[in-house]
Length: 389
Picture (tube, rainbow, N blue to C red):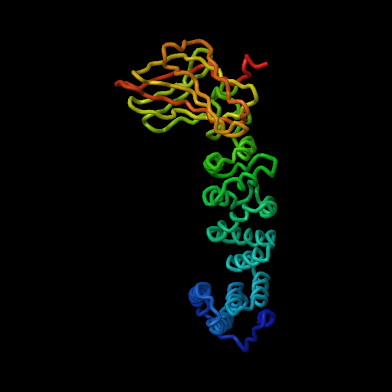
């Protein structure tokens, strides 16, 4: 009792006595929660006197608890006495570091004073003490990623053993206005990104957003750092590595349209693995797409292993330059369904000059007919143009 009286006095409250607790202490907790919500939702100076009285009454019912001192601190905050509010909250933390409301207040207070490291420490304690509290604080932590200084302070928490990292990443990749800061957070670590629960869909969403926003440099730097990725995928167009299908994150690995009009799949062909694409009659669209990091003088090589076309059908490679001095330039191959294009003979399409990244599309028009148009590609590779000196 004496210890509590001293604690109360240290934050500016004089308590004359304590009511007998008994069962009323437990019933008061519901009232305490309602009061806390009322103060938080209607924080005006007009109500500060009532809040102060409520804080004292709360302390009498529930002495020596962090939540009671939190309510006292909130009452000071309502009255515009921020320094006294902070003192009450710090006293509450000395009683218990596991009270989520106290840690939330202190974390927000630290961020307001631009003490990012201190704010993160309180938020970390808050989530570890109350898993459900993560929903209240994770969106605030995600916003820290937008600033370089914030990413620097957040870096120590980016580890696989962190219990709230998965939720932070999910919020960041879906809710932040830009994806590049999230990518930079992982790039700055200079090592593999954490392989955490649900990481594949999160990282896949991140890569998709980076490309959609035109953050190509960040995407190229980040891709090799992602779990399950292969640096070779950035230039590999064959779809396989060491005889196995190239697994990773679209669009740096082949992505086939999942609609009914166009699509494709990997198939076995003589000498290895090929790509089979189709286009339904009366439709035009992209059946397969992949981003490819290219070098000066690169060319795409392939063979037509098999084909079945319709009237006015077509199948062409389209290489759109995304980054470099020739950005937005594109080159297109001949129609591989045309009889003038030979089968089982190496074909070539030179990549755009002055380009470092292309989006390679397989564009298929189904034409006029009853059955889909089909094309099977084999011996697909990216190599230096044989005509380049």
